[in-house]
Amino acid sequence: MPLRERAKAALLATVIVVAASGLILGAQMFRPQAPALAQGIVLSMEIDGPGWTINYSNPETRNNTVFLFLLEAARTLHFAVEWSNWSPPYSAVFVDAINGARGGGRWWVFWVDGAYATTAADLTVLHGGETILWRFTVPEGG
Amino acid sequence: MARPGAFRKLSRLDLAFLLVLFGIGGRLLLLRVANVETVLAASMLAGAFLGWRYALFVTVAVMGVSDAVIYALGYGGELGLVSILGITAFTWSGMTFAGLIGAWGGRRRVLFTTRSIAILTTISIPATILFDVWTAFGDWVFIAGPRGVPLGTVYYMQIPFTLIHLASSIVFVPLFGSIFSWLVPAPSHAPLPEPQEGEP
Image (tube, one colour):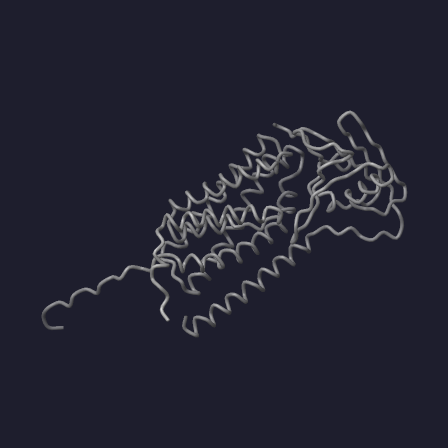
């Protein structure tokens, strides 16, 4: 490869690395960030499992994402939560099992104040006063 | 020292199968990394190097095999059969668009030059955006919309994933484009026309 062509290739590689890094950093700016709370907030949660229901509320929690609040409930009421992690650059958790309930054509999905979640549980930031509903449900349309 | 010419004599079908392997392998290896994938690059490169028929073949082969493996592993089960079929229609057609864009971009012969690779990389940007706009619409039609999520929210939530997808495309298209442009058979020698008799 001639020297001039090598210089052009090196320039292209540099532009690509800089652009890709910038795009990944840009994506992080859209990532919801849960603020550190100076004081607790009121949250409540209902978990509808197969034949059982768990209710949990805390008037002064500082766990202000759906996932952190779920872990708090699990730690307090002694039930298990299993999840899997999606890798960076846009990592997120997917809840696989709550209190031993998993699989069998059903999945754990959640709503916040009746609204279907549009982000992962660890990226859903709570501000206080919300009610979270977890339901072990059969997918719609199938 | 000259490179042995035999290594460059891969047939178009060989290259298509290499692209299929690259697409499937990359998609499955990167399954846990959201929106970092090799399928769009494989489809685009198939179109650019081999033409639109191979772009269709590579896209269908990669998506068919990798979707079968992914759903067999249990991914996407929370969506339900109707949603999966609907999303499949959007992703497959979106990747086909990318392959056809690659074929359009490569209608002039793609050579093992920085300029060719830079052009392919640039073309991958609108191809990626088109794919994401199209499949986010499919997501809204089959998943988010029926659950009451507005289309605008779906597109807003899509932004970080599209940025990552763009990063993925501008890395994989030139990386594998360089390799494949090197493996593509060199342009055949075109003999110069014979000089005509007579006065100039």
